[in-house]
Image (cartoon, rainbow, N blue to C red; front, top):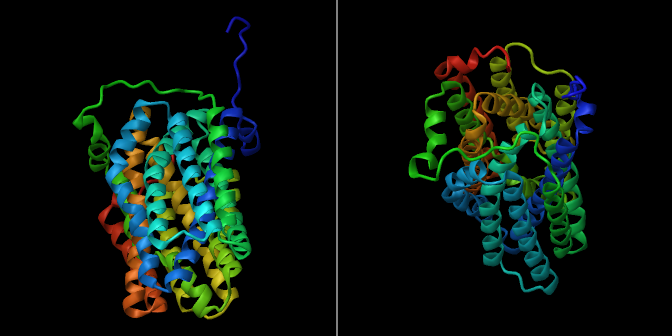
Length: 411
């Protein structure tokens, strides 16, 4: 710089939101998550209304996971080789088109359960490319040294959308099944436009041609890094067992005796706790014993899941879900920051793809597992067993991965 002036990056959460690349990223992620969270309520309630089957509720998760599992490694390579914001933008356009299809079928009253499952599978395929690219894009839109705060704020966008999306989705579904799908389409269109306007601070240029070895390089990197392997696998097994949210349509309708609006409120309750915790973490970053803090958060998540599972009270259920959301946010912020900081920038897409595969294996297969267990034993025993299993996994992983347990700082 000829004038000798050095640009000072934003140092706080508010200043980070005034940083144009991050602000656009923040809004785009919020709109996309908002649409996705509406779909969770609309699809879940519509399928259960048509079939009254816990098995079919579980199949929603499996239908979404299978294309993700098949495409994840290709998606990670795409995130490292192509313009990440364009990858995200194309995925959101596809998701918006599928939402238009669901809206048209619902308004026209010709939409069937198999067609809903096909749409859910396309959502899964699009998200398999969108999520690793979006995760890898984050470090390029925040100034250096602010990744933990950027991760917390990005999680805040996710949680705000997760609070408003399900509640609004439930209310709109009460008007008509096609209404929430129409709003989803509009949100994904807005998200794609915002992503297209992002100017990345530190763009990534591909350094190697696509080969089979480079395609699976993320797996090798994770396997040889005990802290990352422990972090990702902890999320896989803990959430796989603690997937009580898949049973929310059953709880809302048959146990708590509420309607679509109640399902929306229940869906949004974990995000209330998450948002509160996000605001705390955006102002007060972890400075010590982060490994132990993560394990403690997972144990609290499991305990709150057991309370939710056994509750017949709407208010107690909401309180348990809020605590689940807050504790999950602590785990997510630490986990994502650890993975991003330990990964070279030109590998973030592929490592993010492995992380994404584990996350969605836990979420979607967790929904499948919960649906199957509920079909066999009932919703309440299934959810309670899942919470107990989550606690057991956290205690076991503390012994299996002492390197992760003893991580002191995120730096």
